[in-house]
Image 1 (cartoon, helix red, strand yellow):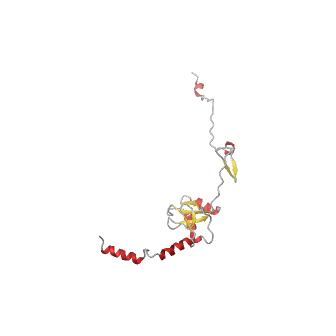
Image 2 (cartoon, one colour; image 1 turned 60 degrees about the horizontal axis):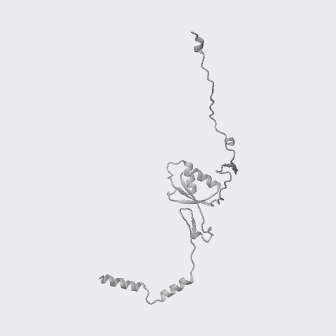
Image 3 (spheres, helix red, strand yellow; image 1 turned 90 degrees about the vertical axis):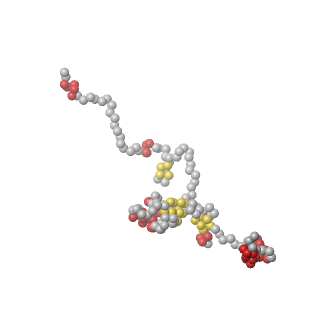
Amino acid sequence: MNIGRLITPLRSSTWSVRSYGKHNKKFLYNDGQKFEGITYYPRTPGHQDPPVQPSKLFRVQRIKPVKGNPYWEKRILKDLGLDGKQSDFTVVKNIPENNARLWKIKHLVKVTPVTFPYGEPTAQDVRHTILKENGECLVTKDLGPIETRLEARQDYDEQPKRLDTDLLRKDARLKWLNPW
């Protein structure tokens, strides 16, 4: 018996090498389009996104409680004025500084873009604006006197058979005294 044969290890003809590194996207996806430092990969080669006009203002409402959050998130909520009741909301500008703040507390708030379906309010319209929960800012302007309304009011006041308070009171009293 040859003992040397039993001691020699078995040799494998194929070696597998594992690579645990990350793939390099530069070589994997090379058909992307650069857009302000961000590589964008459209679904089809000729795809164009519709033009988007970003909102100037955001309506921010807190939807989660403040309790149990770290101090930096509480400080951001306090700076925005959202440290009161949970139903309170605030309006902030759409600028990079505010967007960075909102990104840090995105799990605590609901951000809705403010839209102006009937145009932006002027300085005189500020007292007549309403901001809805869906972000629509409506201007309810004061209606001035209309000639037809004034004429209808004068005709009503001049009618002899109109229902005024004295006639209604007298009729209600008679019905109370004689119900059948």
